[in-house]
Image (cartoon, rainbow, N blue to C red):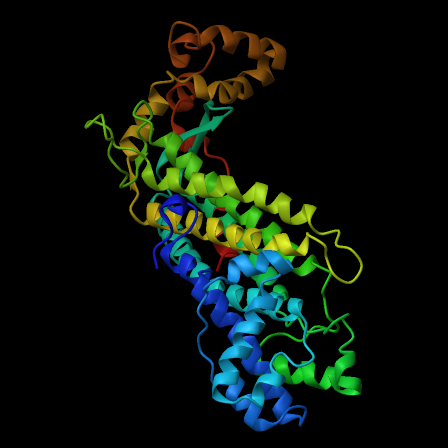
Length: 428
C-alpha cells in the first residue's frame, strides 16, 4: 500500500504496508496462534482449541482504535474481537484465547514481528546504496575536486575519496543498526507481572516453545518495563539516518548551479521550468529530519514505572514505527539518488582553477618556511593571493620547478587514495 499523502516523505510503500492496520492485526493474530499451538503441544490447552484459535486469519479493525482509548491498550478490544470470532466456530475454544498472557505480551511481540518484516526492506536498500557508492568511488578515484571546510574552498581531494567517506559512515552505522535489530527481535512473554505465574513452573518451558514457534530470540527474562533493546534500535536508526542525511546534504550543495559538480535525476519546479531540483536529496533530508525528535521521544519514555508503564510504553508504537519508516524513506531516497547521480569532473577542476591557486596556500607556506620561517612565509603567501594568482604572487621567491607544480591538484592529494582504499576495504 502507498504511504498516506501526509506521509509521502516519511515512509515508503513497502514500509507503510509493514506498519499498516492490517499488518498490526496480522502480527497480533500470529502471536495468539503461536501461543495457542505452543500451549497445546505442552498440554496446557486442548488441541482443538488451539486449532480454532489459529484458524482465525483476520479481524475487522472496526472500532478497535476507539475502543483501545477506553482501556489504554489495543490488546483488550483485540482479544475480545478474537474471542468472538473463535466463539462463532467453536464456543468451547473461546475460553482458551489469550490464556495466561497479558496485553503487553501480544503488543510488544507484535511490534517485534513487524520490525522483523521491516529489516529486510532496509537491508535491500542498504545493499543497493553500498554497491552504488563503491562503484562511484572507484570510477572517480582520480577526479580531483575542492575540499570545502566551513563551506569555503580548501586543498583538493578526489571525488572518489569523498564517496568512500560516505560509504564508510553508512557502512559503520548500518553494521551497528543491524546488530541492534538482532538484539531487539526478542519474544516478550511475561504474563500479568512478568513471572508467568499463571503457568506454575511451566512458564519458562512455554516461553521457549513460543519463541521457537515465532522464530524469535528467547530473552533470559521478560522485558515489560525494560526498553533498552528497543532503545538501541531506535538510537542506531538516528545515527544511520544522520549518515544518510550527510550524503544528501553534500549532494544538494554540490548540485547548486554555481558549483555544478554533480547532479541527480531531480525534479522540476511548478513555477520555474528552468529548474532541476535535488528531489531525492530533499526527500532524504526531510525524512531524516524527523528521526532525532523521535529518538528523543523514545528515550524520554524509557523510565517506566515498576513492572508496567503508565504512558511511556503506550507511546512507543507510533514512535518506533515512525523511526523505522523515516529511516527507510531516507535510505531509499539516497540509494536512488546515488544510483542516478551524474558527476562532472571538468567542472570540479574548473572550480579548483577558479581559486587562482589560493587553495594551495598551505603548500606554498610549507615550501617557503624552511628558508624564511613559518610566520614570514604565512605573511608573504597571504599577500600573494590578493589580486593575482598564487603562482604570479610567488614568482620571485619560488624556484621554477616549485612554481610549475605549485597549483597541480594531483601533486597535493597526500594520502587521499590510501584512505579511499582503506575505507572500501573496511566495507567488504
